[in-house]
Image (cartoon, rainbow over all chains, first blue to last red; front, side, top):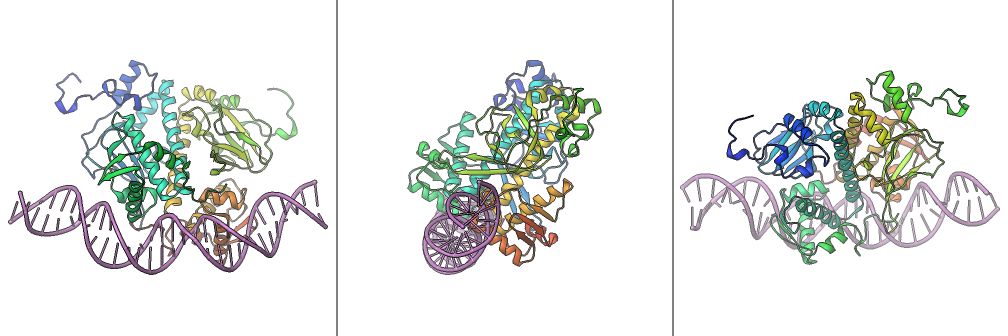
Length: 250
Length: 250
DNA sequence: CGGGTGTTTGATGTACTTCAATATCGGTGG
DNA sequence: CCACCGATATTGAAGTACATCAAACACCCG
């Protein structure tokens, strides 16, 4: 597109994107990157609360987040919402829709969010001739799978305090990998949403946060979080602290 | 291999396998099936308790179960075991190892079990030229991902009774799809293992089973299960019963 | 027929939920 | 800029589902 690029849309191709190391396979050659770039759409940013796709909606594309944050959730017939994930820049959503050809979850922007839209049929065709790309797709999905399994076990076998420690550490790592501070960050989601994700009541969230503060592990100011003692927080998250596990015996 | 096949090893290729509809993509032509068949190894059956692979072990292959049952679990440094999944004939394990190139879980046979071993590097090469196969791999992983997410929400947001209902229904469906009775089946795992998987103490498992029996939903005799009222059990499992959810409010 | 494992049952404890009320934040308009 | 409002967060008191402890019981394979 040899035309004037609006100021807002700098960095609209993969080769310039500073998230490329997270998004793209390492050993993808320039030609392949260009091909990939060719199929990617970059829709205008979503406002806070705007849906990226709806539960039950047709599956057409997967999405890589460029800026902002997204939550995915399932809506039950009775109106209950179950939050299933939070996604940050460089992360990919929609992979769980490939099999049934429609999205099991609804994805909503938690703040102003811009994404790369990758039409899946194009991606499939492209990856047929690109070993690196095919492998990358499998790796992303495999990683997601392993993460989800780990999460499962955390949620099932660990106390509220440990669950919260786990997400805080996870967010810290993810912010860190994106060049932001792993010590101080702002939660993109409400306590309510975070609690829902962890299977905890908002009141419990509040109490647990206060408990972590009393232990001088974290310091909170609304959604702003400061990790005061990462080492100890990680021990807590990994269940290697003195605190016993829930249902920990064998 | 034009040589005499031992009696035990009947049905040693994909085209004859009655699980092919579960295992293989629908629109894979005969040539492709033969190629696939060429890379698959069929090791001798595993005895009850024998490991298929170990946590931390090198990732070389994924495995499709032919007969028997397998459980996967993570072992914590302190000796605790977290059961992460149960797998039946036609199901594939090891996909979570692709990304980090080693297995996050240990897989153990719950009864005498035979598997198809699919070396992953061969599979990758093969699927480069086979759109149907590449798509199939993605679909399997996508399905696994969606399943895992659903499970997450079940475990986090639902009561012990509903969790048990969910696995029973799941097992019923899976046995049904494999040509076995969806009403009567034998659990391949102990109550302890099932409880661990669901995040429940064995004592709780026992009590919940008795509760389901009192409600005339199921009938148990050790590991033998009979589903007496599938409709109601499914309602319970899907949270549409009168029984309230745990932490159900939005 | 024993002993180890897996299951059941009861009594007690507790982590988390739920309910209810108050406090704080973030935005909007006077 | 402050007043106001709804949404979000906090705090306390009471209830409950499940874990834990302890002991009896069934089962299976030697």
